[in-house]
Length: 278
Ligand code: MG
Ligand code: MG
Figure 1: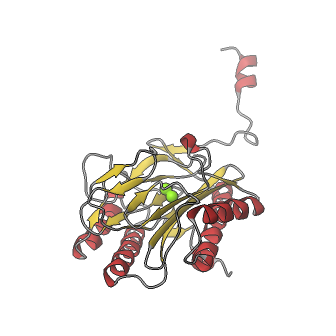
Figure 2: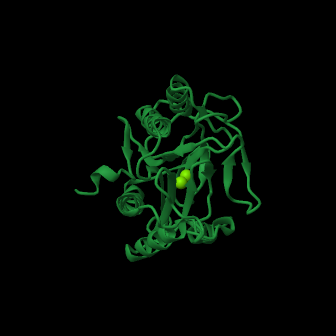
Figure 3: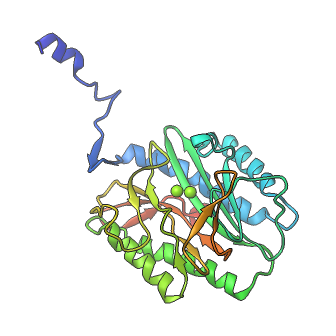
């Protein structure tokens, strides 16, 4: 390579900032994190608003239309719509549906249902991703216990997020909460890195395993942690629509997900709904 081509190929620090990667995982810089906060806040806002508005008689298609409109109003685009051909802006799952439920006009939400809403927003080059489970009206004690445990499992995992800890620390904490409550963890769907891509390395598993690479966490990693708990067995099957996944034994399923930033001292929950007021 001669000097001229060296000069020409030298990256312009303004237009192509050097991306830091560890084992294929991109570490986000301060500016990128600031953008991710905005994407994540849009997701948190949509989920908060849906949790406040949903009521029996609405359909999952109604919620999808609302979410898409709000995501676009806030200047973002729905991360899920068109992703591998997914037709909607939210995944909406009722009761025994586990993940990737396609919103439908014929899916009417009823009192007693356990509803999961998962959505993502793409803002200025970065994605946020989060999921909540909402009890509709009065639900059974056991269904509420499942929801509470799934949320507690997510937060137990998040408590392990800190530079120097590993993915296994997160997974172990989630597994312990689920096991203590006698619920099973779905193993064939896991969390992921999130950033420029909705799904990027690493796989953030929710149970102790040697099948997936254990990674030491570093400041600047952004992870979507998203344990799914089933009331009974862990096994699932995919319906003929090729998206909707249900529990094999038809038992209830619950899930919570946050996009979380790893910091030197711990974590920041980017999709935290509690900070929307600020
Ligand atoms: Mg999600
Ligand atoms: Mg996710």
